[in-house]
Length: 423
Image 1 (cartoon, rainbow, N blue to C red):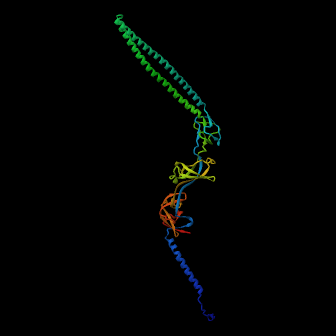
Image 2 (cartoon, rainbow, N blue to C red; image 1 turned 180 degrees about the vertical axis):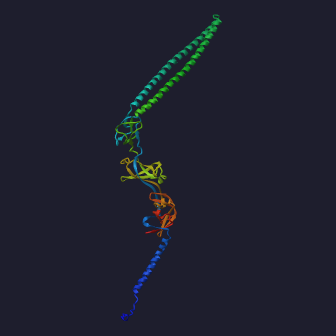
Image 3 (cartoon, helix red, strand yellow; image 1 turned 90 degrees about the horizontal axis):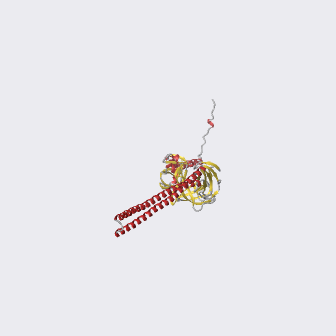
């Protein structure tokens, strides 16, 4: 039988370790404190409908102060007056200037040679000359006719006077017994005939005079009408010399220096450098508040100039509206056509307005609600917004000064009522 070692064993008394006990107790207390502190957050986390990382969001505080509503955009310099010149008639065109040349009002910029038009003018001028001769001849004929009628009237007056004298003599002779009653009666008949002839001569003179005047007037009107045709053709011939309508600079050339062109073909453009404006594209949402006469600023090349809105297009293209801003006062000399400049147009300026930084939340919610962040929870809150500027939006209802809201990234909330914001 093999003997064991139980006879050698002995009981050892283990003394308690106070230091380790204190460590366990302290750790337990710390754990309880952490749990107590984290419990509200844990409760809030479980009470939220969703959880989104703060790194995916943008926040802003609601503030009260001045509110400036304006539009800032890039624009290009354009001439307020930039006419394009056309060929008024077809023919061989010769340009007298080059692009960039400085020109004066009335200066000939191009010449169009049109033998057809010049020949037509000569033909119509010849017709006008013939009508003028006819008109002058009618005046001569009228004077001759008036003379003949006047002569007949004067002779009728003489005959009537002679017949009256003859009747007077016959009556005296008859009273003295030197003449017969037959002679007296004949003298009376002769006087009546003379009076009738005189009356007809007078009527013919008046009627013929009116007829002759009408004939002359008709000839004159025909000649005047033909002269209008000649004047119109002469204007067209003069327009073959294409002249500058303004003082300025030659812009774009649409044809070669020598070319055959059709009627109404573009020849060249002229830029009036004394009246420059800046054309900008304004978002449709701002364009409805834009009005002619609004003030603004134009800046570029280290300079800033005052401006006024001079024109607004009634048409919307690709969600934008074209507007023009003219320089208030003297137009700067150093600017060029199509040069890029910055434009800022003041729409509204008010004090003591509740605003928040503009973000995608306005478009995502239609301005009807926002997520207010408090203690790590974003709560969906009904709001009402007013007008917007480039970087701010007016708050009319639902938010208070100092509130912190989510301005971007709320599309990830999917419309949840409460969202936990994790770090």
